Structure formats: C-alpha cells, structure tokens
Amino acid sequence: MVTKTIFACQSCGYQSPKWLGRCPDCAQWNSLAEEAVGGTVTQGRFHALDIVSTDAPQRLSEIETQDHIRTSTNIAELDRVLGGGLVKGSVVLIGGEPGIGKSTLMLQASNIISSNEKVLYISGEESTRQMKLRADRLKVASENLYLLSETSLERIIGHIKELSPHLVVIDSIQTVYTSALGTSAGSPGQIRECAGVLTVLAKSLGISVFIIGHITKEGFIAGPKMLEHIVDSVVYFEGERHAAFRILRAIKNRFGPTDEVGIFQMGSAGLTEIKDPSGIFISHRQGALTGTSVVAAIEGTRPLLVELQALVTRSNFGMARQRSTGFDFNRMVLLIAVLEKNIGLNLSNHDVFLNVVGGVKVNEPASDLAACIAIASSFKEAPIRQDTVIIGEVGLGAEVRSTSQVQIRVNEAQRLGFKRCLIPKCDAGGLKAPPGLKLLPVADIKEALDHTLT
Image 1 (cartoon, rainbow, N blue to C red):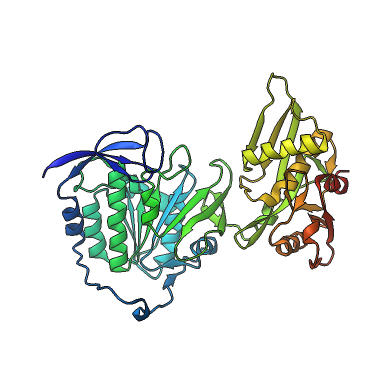
Image 2 (image 1 turned 135 degrees about the vertical axis):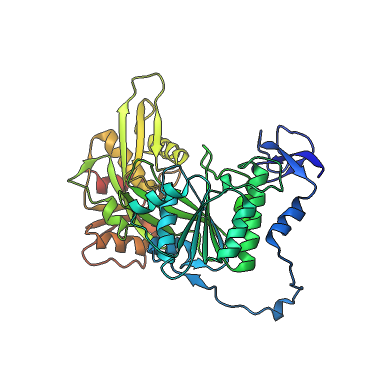
C-alpha cells in the first residue's frame, strides 16, 4: 500500500497537500493537522462493512413516506431532547465535559432499553470489570445488556454483526481506530472515518447508535467539524461538573426539534430526571434579596423560572472587572452600558458579577430586563420584591421590547405562586392574566425599577 501525507483541517475537513497556517475554507488558524493516507482506505472501509448498495434513483413522486420507528428510552427528559424517542437506524453524538455524566446516562438508558432488546455497550476507555463496577453502583443488571472493551473498528463491526443488537453505544469515538488508516486513534482522519463507517452500518442494518465524544477546551466536540455533519443528532451535556444539575441540549436533530432541553440531577445512584425544574431553581428564596431577580425563560416548549444574581462592588484596582456565569458576557457588557447611559448608574468604577443560579445557562434576550434590575438593585442596595417575575428584552435606548410566548411564561409564574409579573408594554394587548397574578406592563427600564425596587 502506497502511503502519502496530507494536511486536513480539524474544523471543516478541508484537505491540502501542504501545511497552511490558515484554512482557506473555514478561515481557522492552525487547524490543519498531518494525516497519513493509504491507497486502500475506501477498499478497507467497504470490505469491513461487506455492504453493496442496490438502490437505484427514484422519482420524488414515487417515494413512499412513513413515520419514523421510535424506541422510548423511558427517560422522559432524554426522549424530549431526541424528539420523542430513539429513531431506528439513527446515529446520535453526545458531547460534554469530563465527568459530566455522559457514560452514566448512556448506561442507564442502555439498561432500560435492554429490558426488551439487545444492547451492546462498547468502551475503549474502561475494561469490562470497570464497567461492571459502575453498573453495580447504578443498579444496572439486565441480561440483555452486553459489555465490550474494544478499540478496533473492524473487530467492533464483527461483534455488532454477530450479536445484532437493537442499540450500540460507542464510548468514545476518540478511542476507536481503523487499520485502513496509518494514523493513531483520535486523529481527525480516524474520527471522521470511524464515524462514517458506523453511520453506514447503522443505516444499512437498522441499528441505533449512540456515540460519545470528547470536547476541546473551547467546548466543541474534539475532531473534525465534519463529525457533526455525519451523524443525525448532536446533543451536548451541560452543567458545572461539581454542581448537581445537568442540562441535555440538542443542537442538531434530523428527526425532531433542536430547541428542547432535558434537565437531570446527579446523585450517588446516577442521574434522575427533574420533572419540575422551575420549582427546583427558585426553591431556596427567603425574603426580599438585594441583586436577585427571577426571570421566566423558555427552553424549547418548556417555561423555566430561574434566578439571576448580581453583585456590584466598588473596584479596588485600576480597571473594573466584569464577569458572568450562565449569562452571555457580551450581552451583560451591553446592558451595563445601557444602565450607565440612560439610567445614570455610575458603574465604570465598580466590579459587576452576574450569575445564573443552579448552573443553567440563559441565552435568550427575554432575560435582559431581569439582569438590568438585578444589577441596579445591587448597586443601589435596594431589595427586589420577592413576589415578582420579570420578562422583557432591553434595547439600546433602555426601552423594553417585545418578547415571544409571554402567555406561557406568565402562566408558569402563576403556577409557582408569584403575585406580580413585569411584561413589555407592547405585549400587554390581548394577554390574559391568570388568577392571582397581576400583570405590570412597562415601557422602559426606569418604569420597571419603580415597580420592583423596594
């Protein structure tokens, strides 16, 4: 076999015969890595699969459609993110920080599915004894759950064909390699080739596949960006490693929505579902607090009430510090500028810290007004009324702008016992106030501060 060397971009998969400092396709710097390419790569790939395509081109009008065959994992939060269950023949990529709970979730899901179907759990990072210890801790003891410690793609394919499982879990794709390439496991070429082969195998045999992927320090799944294009769904497991709550979020899904989230809590017995996340995230409120506001956010179709905490202190250094956790930093800086320009708060010589309680992330603009009020409350040392939920996007002129799905948000606020809800004035028309909840339409930040600060 004749071997040649190419340079492949780890972000987009672009290939160059020589090294380049910047990828001409995706414009990323230092993203090209050297790969050894053999002359029989394609031959080795299809020889391992032993698959010959017999499909012929069909007219669009001749193709019959049918509903996707889904298997419920009986984990409602996971099914929600997948769009209603696991689709037969689909490939799902799961990424997340080390220790966040990816393997735990997959082992728990495998245990439930294996009550009716065969499941093969393949790990390239742990021995079968290590996996058994983790299974005992999670009380996993299904007779249809098979464990395998293997990294060779060719041997993995052989075991899959022999066992014919309903579900296969690969933990993780960075440890799997194929002998058709001369590079080591974890290289961009190996990851791309192994994921491509597993996808073809899943489609041809109708086997569902979960692939666990490592992530880089920037928070992206390690390997070429093409990996996310190959699979059917990409799911991220988020949350602080040392915090109890975990959020499962889909960023790509060919068989369902991409705006749903699943919320779990990590404990000694594994992951448990959070059925009422709003009640969990605001359950520790005691009296009116300075710099603490409640926002009604929307995650997919689910309303979620979370607390925003702000801390504003006079800076003891030459330059004031600004930090955010769970809230977009650039958005926070913009809101601080709006408060200085339009409200007259002198924040330029103060440190500003903004935190979303519970380790969750709030990214939608509807949380702007709650962040502004929390910062102003901490700066003025004025508590915020405890019975108030705040909704609204803030413009550069300090005006409160329209927000989507306001009715769903206010209904959630009423369900959890809040008495007042600040909403954008432009959304007040046609809005129905739930029993016991008073709606307070506001046009700008000044009016909002008058309603909330005590």
